[in-house]
Image (tube, rainbow, N blue to C red; front, side, top):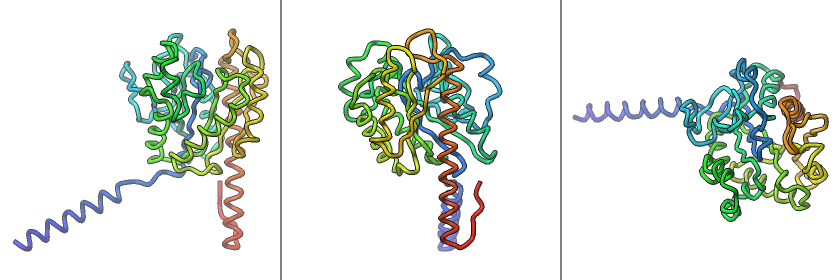
Length: 303
């Protein structure tokens, strides 16, 4: 009887050890980026058929909306980042945006050992209040029906969905940055940078991130059109957020409307987001190498 009990205890201990060992740590070579905003972040351009094929499997998207009604994507699961990245349905076959070429550029330029994952949560026409964790409840009832429909796909809490998805992603990789393209609905508002800072700092706190390790990349709006004046406000963001960087929209081709970009415009904007991130990653690697060299008296090997 005692032998049987001892065998059971040993077996349970072995199973526990296997369970602990099987729980893999987050992969430091899986770089995660949170991407949020309104329609230009989601991508307003029609997705060209040519952009739906040949996407490198190292570029992944964590599907963040409710389960796709078409059945091909489920909330909280990783997929090869074939557009559209934000939601599965767009009335004009839209959903091509800057994050497509942000991720594609990164995987092209980074070492092949590194994967890139993105979380895209966006709502066209949304005031920044929709992303303010303590204020969105007052704003949502004032939205037009089609905006409410998009918000419903994110559980009527876009900020909460960002945090939920980011926490899932942190089990698999490391968050390296936060990208935002929002402001057309707050065009010209001088307090927008401060409100943006509050959203950013809430994300850092809720995800246990350091600002120096998760910089904020802020995209400019169109250089022409009804909201172009907001770029003057956007350019002041680094004065309010030391770890923020402005991504220029100069020469990014516009769509035929007043606020959005064309496919080519989104490609260029996405590449610029990536170029800035590559610069920041390179600077970070250099600093880490210097720290290691200073600490141990010899250089460390970094990529």
